[in-house]
Length: 469
Image (cartoon, rainbow, N blue to C red; front, side, top):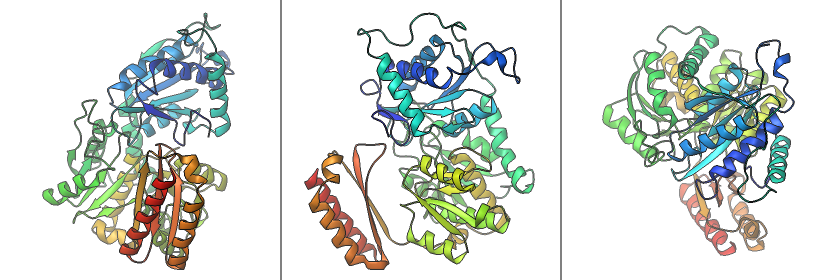
């Protein structure tokens, strides 16, 4: 990755690391790279178009309002027409980038991060994530543009095709919901109310899902109780959502619901909770969907793509089901790259990023939750039983913040500690230590047959990282 883009776009504290000036300059640089070669007047699909256009969405963070204004200004000043989507899940922006024929799309969100943070995610034509090479080019264009006198931001002069015009897409939300509902019909001709009979709690993380997820599940026939569905710009991901799953677990048990669905702030993740409050993580959801698709003869190559973080129990279950697992580094961009290369249709992460390439270009939490619940309804079995297709090994995850990632990576003491832990575990477990791609932290994962052993080794490694960093 470059200096600015991480594994999931640009991210930082709004107003300090991610300023309005930076957002405008990034937008102008992206316009230069992604729209410069577009000759809209020659577009046979729309010969009336005089300029390239982009769609822009955001999650409900308060900082998203000024950052949206800055991005729109940078694009319009660069000669790009802008369609504002308003508050929209990240996968909704990706879908609409493709569906509306935009040159590119911009999403303002810091996903699962707390409210003071924000981020910029950019999708290329077709709603796909940018390749590394394009991100490098945008960074180079940005660096070149910022070598100007202080206070001068954005493009200078009048673009050849004139300044871009800005409009709002009032129908965008409905268009996204209709697409989601249509995926069930596309897959196996589901009835009008495929979730009829299910009582579901959906946790919207006080984020972008609040406008969409409850409505989606109700239209699919479920009886829905929504929590974390009152965003005020400051409460996104606060004690709710996929990063605080206990809130959903308690709500499901209290409501006597059949299942719960948890999203993160921009709704590209989905985790679940069964009727007893037990968490069903991304590995289990991926296993359920993989086996369902295989049974339908829709799992390309009888292969699923997962990351190095996936539980050993997931791998065991896939092996038993005759499904091959292709492994990638952490990050849905790497999942998607492997899926496109191998022409696979399903991949996912333990954190709840599930990619269903038959229906979407990126991870979509609303899409995932809809298809998981549809599979429960189809089987007429509780989620707890459906999720037993795999048995999770005890796995302990610790994030160590505030350390120097470079010093940690070079630490001989840490390398020795990792080797000792791996020797102790043998074939019945594993260790993974990696720098976070979205936060200033190093993550430790230890998997073992016994939870106490995993906890002890993970704590010891975390202590070693703190000492090294």
